[in-house]
Every structure is written in C-alpha cells, then in structure tokens.
Length: 125
Image (cartoon, rainbow, N blue to C red; front, side, top):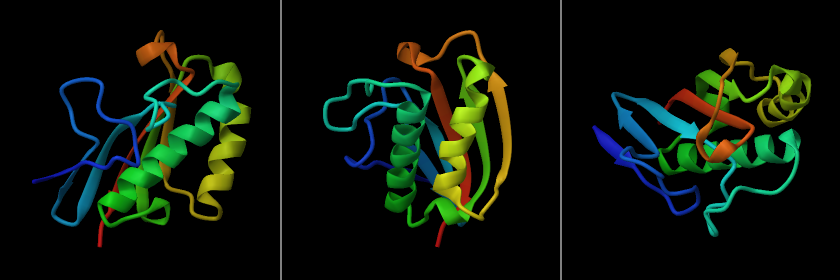
C-alpha cells in the first residue's frame, strides 16, 4: 500500500491519510472544504464549499496518478439534502459527461461543521 500525501490538498485532520493507492486503485479519504494553504474552511455557500471539496479531491487524485475522469464511485455527505440540487450542479460541472456511480446521504454533522464532504474510489495509472 502506498500512502498518498500532497500539499495541494488539506492535511489530514485526524489519524488517516489523504488516500491509499493499491493495485491500480486509489481510495480517497473524504475531503471537506478546507483551503489547503490556510487549513481554514472556505467561506461561502454550498456551491463554494462543493467547488473546494472537488478541487481538493482532484489534487489528491493527481498526486496518486489519477484524475476525476478515472473516478469509479463517489460518496457525497451533505449536512442538508435541501442543498442537493446546488451541490449537484457544481458536481456535474466538475465531472462533465463522466458520471461515476454515486451515493448521496444527509448526515447529522460533518467535521468542522462544513456543509459537504466527498470521498471517492478511482483507477490510477
């Protein structure tokens, strides 16, 4: 197993790594809308937070030799399912015509009280 660590995405805020690469696959830990430089939650609404989460995921995937076009499955955790439509619009722009399998769930609370967290599994070259 190879731990993936990049300064282009937020450092882990607990006892986990940004991703694990094994057997041509990348297993990304959930990303929240932290700015990787300041390690602060980005200001703004669900769209701004989703954009940051996807930038963070893309950075981790790049460090692992992959990208969003190689994602097989995502799990989206939302603080409020009322945000689904707005989150989905940002998600769709990021993934374009590539539509990985996905689950989306509402949760009671997310780390640092953010509005969204996304994890993924991808193929790595």
